[in-house]
Length: 184
Image (tube, rainbow, N blue to C red; front, side, top):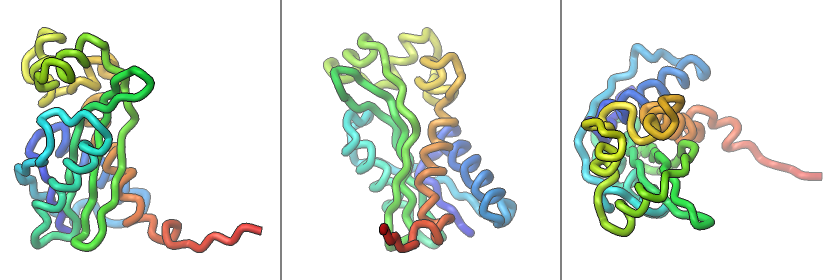
């Protein structure tokens, strides 16, 4: 199995790999036989997506752009969405097999209004804002905003692992996803 991951950022790549390792254990295939390739890919959306539509589109466009001589391509995207007057951070994964796209997402964490304002009103990329807010460098290549806001209970890598696991289920749990439903 050849898997092309549309990112070279360590938290995204490692989150995807962890998801495949868990899926291999549960669905009884050999993780050691998977060949992973990482490829830089543009999302075609904002540097910090700010809607569910943009998050899903960015993940899809990444997955589609790197699908070449592989079993599955994986597009990963993180960003913000707004609901009920709050702003949330969430990670999305799109899995593409050359014919079908399937999506999954992480949980979402509410972000402080100060961060939201810098990104949404002032147009500053979340990676820049979180470095300043956390007084650290290159947070997005480490624990990410998820890690900062949750005191590392949930890291950026964790969020992409969950997003990837949920996106993989239509492939690895096909019996369930193709089952007929007959309600009485």
